[in-house]
Amino acid sequence: MTTQTTDTPVAASGDAPGQTRLPLAGRPEVAHWFWTFVRHNRGRITAMLTLFCLALVAGLVGPRLLGHLVESVQRGTSAFRVDVIALAFVGILAAQAVLTRFAQVQTTLLGEKVLAEIRESFVRRVTRLPLGTVESVGTGDLLSRATSDVDRLNDGIRLALPRILMAAVTLVLTVAAMLLTSPLLSLSLLIGLPLAVFSTRWYRPRANRGYEHLLRDEAEVLASTHETVRGAATVESLGLGRRRLAHHGDAVAQIVRHRQRITWLQTIWYPALDLSTMLPLAVTLLAGGAAYRADLVGLAEITAMVLYVQSLNGPLVELLSWTDELQIGNAALRRILGVERLPVERSDQGAVPDGRDIRLRGVRFEYEAGREVLHGIDLDIAPGERIAVVGTSGAGKSTLGKLLAGVHHPTEGVLEIGGAPVERMSVDTLRREVALVTQENHVFAGTLRSNMTLPERAPRTAGDDTGWSDADLWSALRTVGLEEWVRSLPEGLDTPIATDGTDVPAATAQQLALARLLLADPHTLVLDEATALMDPSASRQVERSMAALLVGRSVISIVHRLDSVQGADRIAVMDGGRIVEIGSHAELLRLEGAYARLWSSWSVAVRR
Image (tube, rainbow, N blue to C red):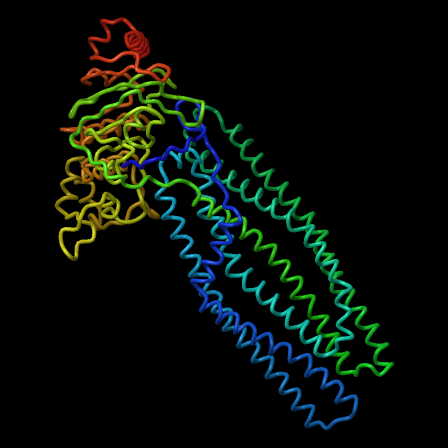
């Protein structure tokens, strides 16, 4: 079945859309997502933060107890008092461990819930994208956003976000405890603050750009790998192996360069963070000694302050280091949310076809502004008529087929089905009218039944999930010649396919796609060389199945080989984005024009 596109132009080259990059979400969109996330999960976030704060408060009591213990020993106290303080210290550590454990559980649950929602939202959005848009951006970028980017966001939410919150709260409570313990010695913090602030402000914007470029180039590597593996046969037959390896190597080299750049930035930033805590520690020791001699502070306060300052290094480095990880998550989130910027399939404007005739008047189309591919196409297709569209490479055949199938729609002119403009139809309505059949058909991991029941149908009974009965499915399988193969499977319609150890041959996958089309029952089929990439025996097998599908339907065949055009009612000859001739095979041969030349060249090639 086909999907709809919008008027958004995409880059093109020749007869097919060129590849463009998916957009990135802006700061307002990221901020909106974040506050929506906080609003919808405020209960769990509150519980998580409360548990973390209690754990941190318990942790901050420890240095004060240790300071009192040191001072008590220095003044000469009883063994019982020392034991009590030591036991209280152990109890505080145990309470902190328990509270931290519960807080981490809440964090994990929150992260899994949010990630599940993000994945579901992403999949829903992607499945609503027009096929033309998906073709223009390629699958590599989409795959990387759906896999590696979601994984990085996963790390950001489950690992970075709680650690950042915990580190931030730790810093705030530690500084508050220092101020309560000794406001005088707390002034030592001012020594390291400028270094931490200015080094971070220098690092963050540079790292942000680096991570965005890194994720973009990782998507390029994934796209390169996907394209090479998918076209392995073509790469091998045309001797493109070295070129593809070189292209892949260049993409990997880009990633290495970005990694090196980020690592270089970190070699400056991390030492600056260490110095920002080491300097206050040294100043605290020096100032504490002087203040003790002047009888301004006690030994307990000095001990607690040294421990507090020393404990600042961990949360400060963790805060800023995990902020770095969160930057990666932010870049990934911008890429994931960027899909929201793409236009989805247009909404229903209420147009419903009254008939099966197709009419094109003055149809023009351009993939991007200023690069028109089709120029003023006029064509009428009667119900049940079979039309073959032929022409040289780049003539516009496939683009015309995609317009007829609703993958794209005209930038100018009129395209109507049953008197209803295509651009005013809902996607579901158009899918029921016209279907595009190509050599590319996907078999989804799952049961054979789930693969066949992809076309929607209203449920017949209360317990009916798909609307398709077993009789419907077997009838479709029988028509396309797959009944015997399915009955040989161990669980029949409920046999898992396209899973580990279960391979579906290309011809069978194509027949399965044809069975789905029979169930969908469109009145018009657009065939774009559905058997061109198959071996002769598989091609003949699928063509026999297709013959049953074509009965009683209008058929527009995009033809690259002329061996099957003689059976068409009419042949439309395209050249330079225009229909230059139209008529039957015999009529066009008598014209001795473009079609006659194509036929002559084809005949000579076949004889050779």
